Image (cartoon, rainbow, N blue to C red; front, side, top):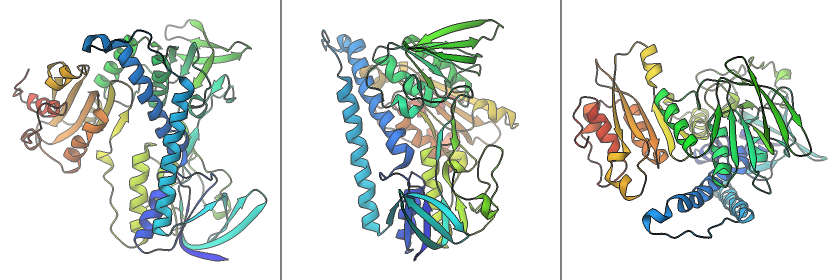
Length: 465
């Protein structure tokens, strides 16, 4: 029976990163996953394939809608959906090979199969009829999450889709009903709306992406509506009837009435739930929370201090970059190095067009916590680079504590917001003041100049508005 310093269960953004970092620190490491392909949900059926389709669909949509304005003739423009899906698969396969190469480079043992604890120090890895057992000094549970189904109808991935099924369609549906207007819903809905689907959202809350700053949520919804997407907010799905043609969705509205919506497919995007099935945790005395999460302390330790948990199976936002940071941190803790994460500065991104990105507190959160909040905004309509590239939609919003001048939050609705938000993360992480942030020199012309202008606007010092 082979023994390791660390066995990591799960090879997604939390697990594979933890494995590589632990190996870099000199530990003997194994990483086990039920998939033969590395990368977990994010790489295989989540973040990466969805971004490949978002890019392809946005390129088509932008040329079709805006090409004439910049001298590009688009008569007869069309798309090849199978080729789009093929390109998505190529991207995923390339990155899978990259992780496998990193495992080999760092001498991480890759185990394929489902892992189950046999005791506190031993796991069994089963792949078909073949089973092996391994022991370790430390274990890290990083098994991730899975789509949450609607309570009254299961996924069939034909008419009732999870996010996984929505990434594997063989044709673009004429009509798509999306239950849930959170991040996953609006991203995947955007893909198919750009390709010609009529996309209709049913959202239980009173706004889209409700964890965002209110101004971003409102601006994003307005933008998506201009792109032809339909929204029913403060609405609840009461039932779905599947037919040969598609699915009939029965919806209770906010005014006490009801409506029926028909779609060729229904995408259920109501969230994700931690995946901890068949790990044998109960036999170890590790009980889950009411939400199915694994309780851990500030060092990611479970009830048994040599068994750790990170990523989507513990409390906190289900974000790939959050999981990866925890992977690095837990590896360093196990190796007696210094591990640190500043959760307050974690960025949150929605990859629609325009994109949404934020870090720190929303205005609602800051006021609820008792801060005297000052706010500055700057529109991309006033940004020279935005005019050159036809990316004038959206704005940057900076929140500041009036007493200390500390930056509390930065929120961006606009093209390439996902790239610009790193400046905001630095500002929150390093506890910068508005004076310090506004003193930085940004290259001209760039979209990121809007961050400087919005920060100057906090004290009505913006130059270009």
